[in-house]
Image (cartoon, rainbow, N blue to C red; front, top):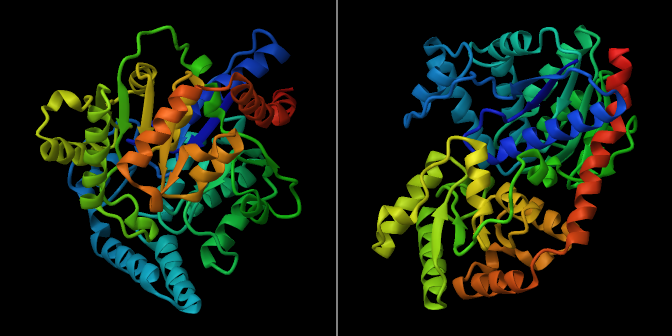
Length: 422
């Protein structure tokens, strides 16, 4: 049985791998119980068409040339136009103008050198010979910033051509969603393809249902990463004596239209660290692996006059990141999957929320106060919430409930996988 796991599997944000690895664990466990001895091979497919080997390169264009499948230097002018129109679309206030720009960019995507043709070639290569396709979740219903909608459409089209089934496992929305947007019509085409046989949501149920259409009854379930402890075989009986502060890159909010930049992040993180030190805590900064997060961390250390040892080396392996989080007595983080990882390992966390997906997640879990909105980004308040979370710990019943929901999202379609095999 050869199963494609499609997601952001080559992202430098290693939290994305927490989803894929946990999903592979759940599928394997379920299939082995149903048919002991079944042989399973996973093919990890990156939605952006990135190569298996990723090089760390500062220059964005050079990084794409080295890391993206069949990316061509000859597409330079088209790319400039494509990105220019993207900026203009975000600045446009009129919905009709936004959609006009989106339609123009869609034409460029269809015929430009580095877009549709390149991705089709990549998906043809990676999906050849697979028996089943699983979209691994995360905030992939997204067309306003990261623009995953085109890749999802191409995967559906590939599945239709090759008589394959596609399932969406605990999918979420990130960024804008408006049914009047041209981008939403692409998402609907992807999810309402006859190849798509199952869709579940991890958040924003209404938006996911709107994309999936009346042909699917979408359940609100949970992210597969709630099984991280089992998927990574983590020993939680380790010594924990520090607070981890999980960083984010300086421009992370601006892409979503939030006016909060690098200077504000540096001031906030420096304030959190100072407050922790005043209250007698040992602390260190860590990242999910994105170079931009590391860059911001160095600015924070400079502001605090602290040595580099206060910033954990950039992880290049998801297991290393998992072990790092497991070593803290509590964390304050900006990355959702750092928080989920901590939750599964019994490490209390608070998360600085800049997107309603975070608030929805913590409400679903049962700890809404552990998602701190931007209006409350004050060091004293954040540390107060961390201390409250630390004193309360993790309710095992709440964790068990989330694990059950995550497992249900897989159990729902396991029979379909077995039927394809048989």
